[in-house]
Image (cartoon, rainbow, N blue to C red):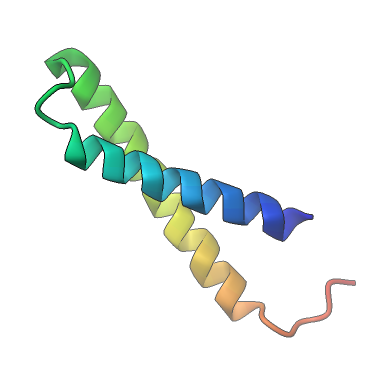
Length: 62
């Protein structure tokens, strides 16, 4: 169940980053700053979760 939550978060983080990159001209400046900061934090956490999952492949969850 936890891996499903990780997968959903990873997909959403990269989707948010992609949307912000594609729509950077239409987002208002004050909102752009905070959304970009949020997206960077989420993408960094997503990379951490990917690496953590890869390091724990095959380990016993008990």
